[in-house]
Image (tube, rainbow, N blue to C red; front, side, top):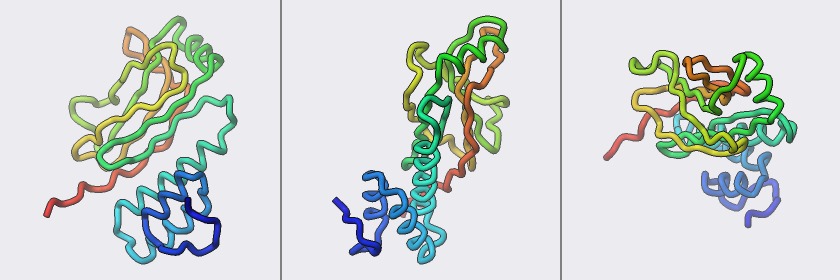
Length: 173
């Protein structure tokens, strides 16, 4: 366990991630920022800082609120969502009926096969969950929304999150 001293014994990304996993987001953010001053182009450090900020936003959201967040983990994007029955009822009103609980993912630049975004069906009874997606090749940003998809293809979002940057792939040496 990492202790609560102001200065960590060793300033590394591993120590910053330990702080983050322990929920010590202030210390994790401070350490990631320090490391980014030393190595501003390191995508792992940028992604670590973004994950700390994502966890902060998620922790600050009211418990019963509809929400979705994205985080990067190596070659995967972790999408965490929580929707309420009230949020789904509002979406059903907009759709004038029923729809399938779904995740809508959009990448930038837009992939030619999916001009409006990929729709991924989710289990109807699963109002909270995490899904891991492969990082699309060539994508530099990704955004997501959770909501209802009608059989007609119409999608009504219950919650959405801002796009996050995807670091370029590491070169194999």
